[in-house]
Length: 236
Image (cartoon, rainbow, N blue to C red; front, side):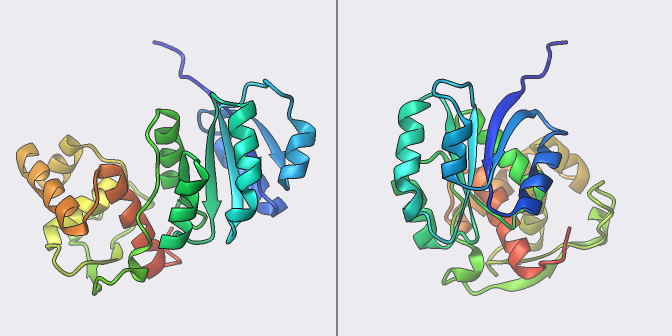
């Protein structure tokens, strides 16, 4: 068996407790040898030009614009590295600023840990991650859904129900599929869990992408995660 690849990364996080928590969480994943610092000035003091860093994870709070110069400098000095921003919200203006800054991804600081790790892994595999604006901020009329009981024993913290704000034109089955996508389940896993065929899962996924006006499974998963955070901030 091939040894799992590990990624070197640096965290820029002004909150010491949050920074330590992220470092501890990532230490249990494929993310290793981290540089931890409170701000960009400290990062420039600690890092050496040409140092091997696969990923820079930077907490920008609510202001991406003030980090533009540092992002440009990182891209110049570390052209093979990926830069991902963490923001307090993923409203449309914030997403636009992140794209304009030329970073490789933007994640909601309130995102679940599992979803955050998966998003960063996608970035490192070459897939930019820019979530749609939080559903609560869109013009879609939303309502709550509770997943049926047969989805209780899914191995995810023993949750018996999952409440999520979604566009009302999604069927209950499409919501089940969407929630499974947010947990990283494959089509086969979803089919087995919901007792439907792979082909039926594909049909549901296509319908979800069309109805939510998003491009791929990754965006669908992030949309669901964001919606879940907005609706149920205490859900783990």
